[in-house]
Every structure is written in C-alpha cells, then in structure tokens.
Image (cartoon, rainbow, N blue to C red; front, side, top):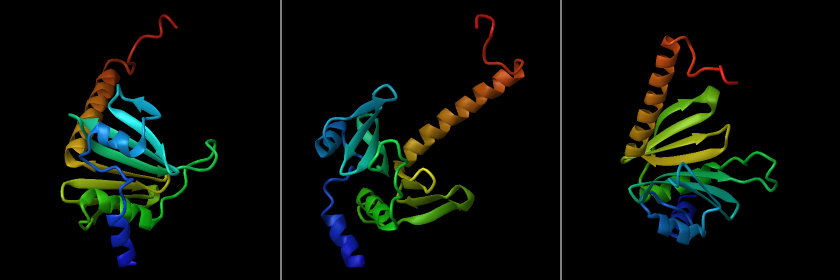
Length: 165
C-alpha cells in the first residue's frame, strides 16, 4: 500500500496544490465553471471531482475537493481514505499529517502538517486543505460576523427594519 501511495504521489500532476497561481490551477483544470466571492474562488470540474480554489495575493491558499455523483441532483460521493491521503500528500510534499481534532458526532476530522490544515467532513463529503493564514483570515471574518450579530441583538434583536416590507 505504501508503494502504491508513493507511486500515486509522484504521478499526480492533475491535482491542484497550495501555493499555485490562478493560471497554474486553470492549466491543470481548464477554465473555471464558476467564480464566487468576488473572483476570489474559482470552481473547476475535472475527472469526476469538483475543486474549489481560493486565492489570496495571487496564490491558492485553500483547496476544497469533493467527488461528484453521476447525477447533479444527488449528493456528492464520499472520498476514500486513500483519496484523502493522496490529496493531502501532494499538498504537503509527502509530509506526514497528524490528527489535531476529531468531532465524531459531526463526522469531522482536522489534521495538521507543517503550516497546513486539512478538514474532512464526512457528512458533506469534502476535504478542504488550507494554510494557517487562510484559517486566521476565515476566523477573523467569522468573529466580525458574530460581533455584528451581537451588536444587532443589543439593539433590539434586529439587523434592520421591516418597515418597507
């Protein structure tokens, strides 16, 4: 099994990697099928996988992988442990990942490796690999949203008026 993993790791040119430019990701996957977050995130479909690449200062610092079902109406398919290991391996240069936290009731695992984090969600069947800087920016956005909600609650529990509805 270890030999197979190393072979796949060396022969995996079709997988996006943290640190690649938008152009490198598009070379790998072709043009984006969708763009969101004001152009910050490009979505690609290739070989039965949906790949979301999020960019900061011109470099990909978050990649989300999910395996697509044959029919768009169906939920995504689970990623196998081997697929998860391969995707984490190509993004870490083959370094070892360590389990940081597991939340069994949510079917979530968080792993860390040399400044990278990987979160596998067994419910939504996706694997998100991101830099520590991405995690810090995401946390700051979530904290700001919570603060805004808290401020709205202090002002009568409303974020706006329903007067013109």
